[in-house]
Structures are given as C-alpha cells and as structure tokens.
Image (cartoon, rainbow over all chains, first blue to last red; front, side):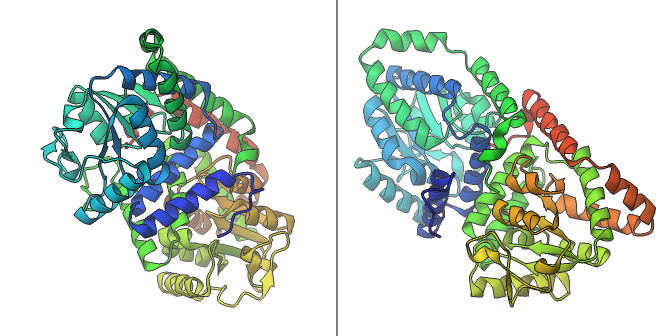
Length: 253
Length: 253
C-alpha cells in the first residue's frame, strides 16, 4: 500500500508496513506484529512523542550502561526489525555486547535474525550458540549465552517479555527496559524503565552516551538522583490527561 | 505454541494464536494483526471485561438495529476472524444484512473472506459484487453494494477504520461502532459507540436483541435516554483509574 507523506500518521504507517514486510522475510513473528500493535496503542496515548519523563529515563539508561562492567543489549525479532542499526550504534557508544534472543525461537529463525542484525549493525553478535540458561524460565526462552546475558551486570532489554525481564532481575542484573506499556511486567521489573517508542528512544540514548562518556561525574549524579517509580507515576498522569483532552485528533481509525 | 489453560491471559493468547493462523489462511492481513494488537492494549486498560458503560451501549445498539428500516452489518477480515458466527446470529436476531468490506482489498482475498464468512454464518452475504461507492473516500475502500451499505439507514461497523466510519456518517447513516479505542475516529463518529472486545460485545447484543424484540416500548425508551458522549467520558475516567491502580498484575510482558 502506498502511503501519502501528507498523512498525519505517516511515520507510524511506514513503520507498520516495514513490520509487515519483516514478517514476510521471517525476521518478525506474526505474534510479534500483534505486540507491535499493542505498542502503537500506548504510543498513541503518549501523543507519539518522547515525553519528558522518557527523555530523562533515556539519559539515566545511558549513564547506567556507561558505568556497567559488562553491559549487554538483548535483541529480539521486533527490536531487530525496528532498530537494529541504532542498537548497534548504542552498543559501540557504551561498550555493550549484543545478544540475540527470540521469543518464538527456531534454529532457522535464529540464524536469520543473527545474519540480519550483524549486517545492519556491521558487527558480530552473540546468540548463535546458546550455551547457558537463565534460571526461573521453563521454556526455550531460558536459553542464552554464558559470555553475554549470563555474565552481564547491566542489561538493556528492548521490547522484552515479562517472564524474561523478571528472571533477569532475579538473577541480580540491573535491567533497563524499552517498553511503551507503562504498566507491563517488563516496565515494572526494570531499574530504569524507558516508556518510549524504540526508534525515538535509542538515538536519544546514543546522544546521552556520547555526552556523558566525557562527564563521568554527571553520569554518576544523574543515576543517583533518578527515581524510577516517581517517573512512571508521572507518565501515568500524563496519559490520563491525554485521554481527557484532545487525543481524538491524533487517532487513526 | 501450546498455551497452558492456567495462564492468567489464556483467552487473549488463544485469540492471538487464532489471528496468526488466520493470516496464514489469507483471511486476515498482516496490518490487521497490528490493529488487533492495538485493540489488545486498550482492552488491557479496560481490565479485559465488558465495563458497565459498554454493556449499556450494547443494549442501545441492539435497540437501534431492531428499530432500523434497513440495518446492515459490515464485516472485515478481523471481524470475520474473531466473530463471524456471532455476527451472523446478530444479523438473524435483528433482521440485518451482512456485507463484507475489506481494508486491504484484492479480488482473491474478497472471495476468500466471503466464502469463510458464509460458511461460518450459514447464510449469504453481500459484497462479492461491489456495484456502488461511498462518497468521500478516495481509495478502493469506497466500494460497497447498492443493496447493502448504500441503502442502509443503520450500520454496525465492528473494527472499522476512521475514514469509512466518517464517510458513512456523512452519508446520513446512523453508525454503531465496536472499537476498543475510546478516542478513535470511528468511536467518535459513531452514534452508539461500543467500547468492548468484539467476542464479548456481540453475544451481549444478541441477548439484548432477543429481549428487546419483544418489548418495543423499552427499546424506544432505551434509545431516547442514551447519551453517547457521557458514556464515553465515563469509560475514559475508568481507564484513568485503572492506570493509577493495580492494572500491573494483569500485564503480560
């Protein structure tokens, strides 16, 4: 379908078509598309912008990644489809490793997504050989690498499911989420919850990583001052105000 | 994927798998899956129940269909996948015609969805031969039938897009929507907006159609007393309260 650039929701529609194409290619699962739709709804309630609280969380997330000993960024099918290149840049800016972790896992799909992400990022990723398991998860999704996720002290988990997010916290890792649902289990489990659309969030995090990399004192201060729960509560209030006011004109159907 | 019946969100997960299977069969488009995801997010904010305001709108919708001269129910791919059988029962209970209208239209898909819906409903539907257009829409989606949508005075439009909903209102039709987004253009265009999940909404509407069919005075009174905007405002307040309170434990990721 051809989308007019004049359409008020051009960006969202282009992304949607991109996701549909990624299903055809086998990088995104069909239920991954449904998850993307859920994200769209929450983004719509936020006004499809990086709200100030999200901007703050992105700064704090960058600081946390910079100060980590062994930071890892996990990438699933949706994250790969939407922001592989940007996540690669963030890994370079923070010294993090990248590990592929699929929700709907098959050997074939795992290879396919690894190939796609390595090409997009221009760097090697972990996850082809999963030699470890994350405690507390019963399914295939427990699988990970000993070099990457298992050894990590700080993990960035964009668009991750709740079971895995909670298992990572239980395993003692500091978790940074990127998830548009302000009440999801992933968001609630995170030490730093970024409630923002991934293609807006990651470039902001790269900018902060570059700036704070040169100002370690500021990075430390930003981390100490951050109150994740207060930040989330402010986002919830913002959504309510939006529901009461003129969210209507941004709606699409 | 096998889903445990113990899973707190069993129903939602089964529906999700059903939608994914419907994509394989060609009844549902990939962007239809994304739309389903948006619905899931709003349903989650409503607590995945028929809230009292939705229950009232379902009663009023049944009354409006019963009192119509030429009621029509439009069915797209998502509506067909989720509730074809129930929508057929509603058509029988209210004397409405059924017309197929796809968002992503192709001759092949149109035939496929018509076949599927006729088999599920056990009755003939309109839409194979589209001999009319709805004014005010530029695309293929303007196409409809002269016998059905064009002649209708009351139209039930489950999961419909905003352009078509607004065009129907401009064409002088009384529109009943079923849409989980309380601020969508479809919801805002409707005379009676049902903000509920389709598989919960339609059976309720059937029950009301059967009861009110025997009580025409009550049907008239119910219609007269209904204030759609007040009803929507109450739903919005309900979502805000849910965001502030314990929606967390119902979350899935």
